[in-house]
Length: 379
Image 1 (cartoon, rainbow, N blue to C red):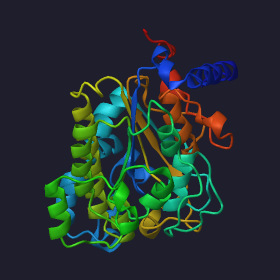
Image 2 (image 1 turned 135 degrees about the vertical axis):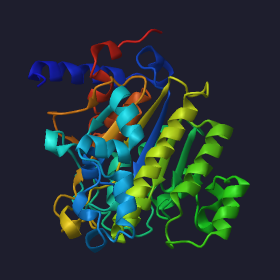
Image 3 (image 1 turned 180 degrees about the vertical axis):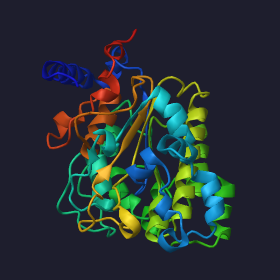
Image 4 (image 1 turned 90 degrees about the vertical axis):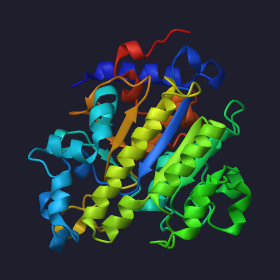
């Protein structure tokens, strides 16, 4: 356990770092780019323990081919199961980054908005604080300024921010009519002027593929549109919101839920591999990966979340980047909340979001003060 005196010193160091203006943050941190990646409604239980045996059935998990699913994802230990499900998380992030949220090992990450569903969760992540006015998933412009909009207002960051999300509410969550942030997909005509043009083959796939959901596009389409934009524009702050994990869980299809999570893991691996060979990103990019809410547990509640679903406030956060000490799976940590993510993003980019918005959560000091040698860097 970290002593009180050491923890206070860590926060003091963090606050001194996060007060650097963007122009001089290179004197403190290597990070110059941040990707915020979300797998909507993906549970901490599968992240840290892998597939659940009782849900890998037709009765409890709607599984079409139980033998094939068990062959792919069942192993005898939680450690082997989670690596089969999420090989990048457990081979790369666990060895070079940090993972928070394993409640079985006294590492708790919680949603604080009380609603425990998507729009309130995304608002909390992106603004650093819950807002009681946001109490539905209705397509209403976010009255709050997200950290993405705020950072886009900085001279050094302006026009270097991009949003990619599968859900049709994202243009409202980021309030693109006010923020003017580029977004894909735009979904409707009122946001088309801010839409990022996807590559032609993605546009054709969207046109030619029968949609599964009215309000959500496929994660694979989003991934390829994101890759195309990164290669062309090299934005410094990127949001990537994958949505299939939540949709398949609501549908009661545990097989598709696991497969979607496995795909997200591979999409993240491919994004990480790509940025490590691009000079604009190599050795100066941090990935923050999380979910917008948790889910319930047991044979039925795993499908759901919300105010009435016990445990769906449980969340998780993974971080990998040049300023994050390689401490792997964290245990016995102080509690963290998703409301700390906005200030963490800004601090990694040399900005103090918490001072601008005092109600926002403080940055997560551990992700770049977990090792004292990480606090200093060569100019």
